[in-house]
Length: 65
Image (cartoon, rainbow, N blue to C red; front, side):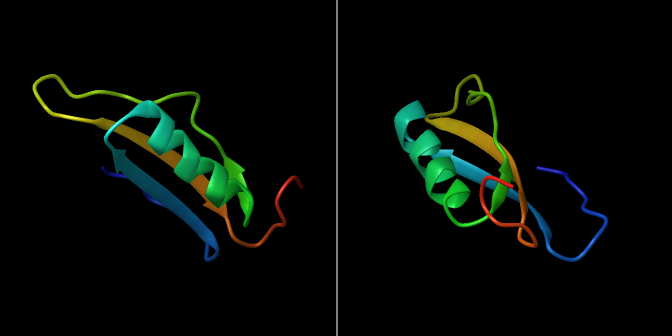
């Protein structure tokens, strides 16, 4: 996963999980702690087990702001 952030307090989080429900649950946990640009859904790599999800966090802001 190649991603670059330009400022302190910003982060890109990659989640690998067995299924959609698990990956989206991790995203919900992160969203309860900080501002997040949530992913619309997960992706699957052909021939690989599980799913992946990428979301963007702003640790400088409160959730829901």
